Length: 168
Image (cartoon, rainbow, N blue to C red; front, side, top):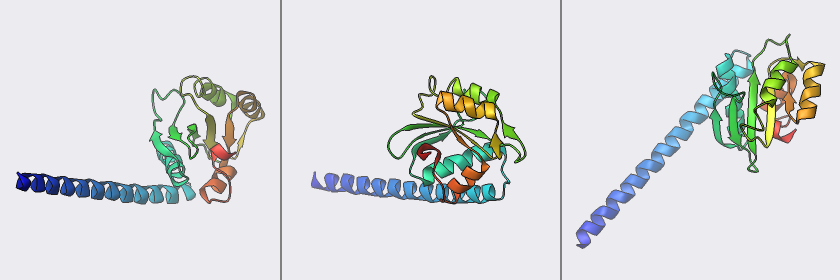
């Protein structure tokens, strides 16, 4: 009887150690992939989907958990969902635009129609590689309670010299 208990305990310990090693391995792979994605973002060499993953990597780096990239067809305006460092529900819309372009009011209105009602955001933000938002977009965001992060603010967030969207 004791032999079977000792054997079962040994098997359980081996399984737990294996699971722990697997978790550490996956975290290392995720950290490596995040570092590569962020390096590509600094070079402005990301596709729209890769940009969403870069925002997710920044969220993870800055203490968010349950980070998901959900962008694509049927995303209802959300590209990244996360639980912030203080437990707040964060919903990000990623706009990978050329630096000369501006994010306009229609983009904000589409996001504003779902970020709070469908996605239940505590913090909703539009993050873009564009240099600016139009005056109408800024006015809508101010009224709707949506935070805006342009290319300059994004660079500051990435370099840790500026706040994350949930800290704006």
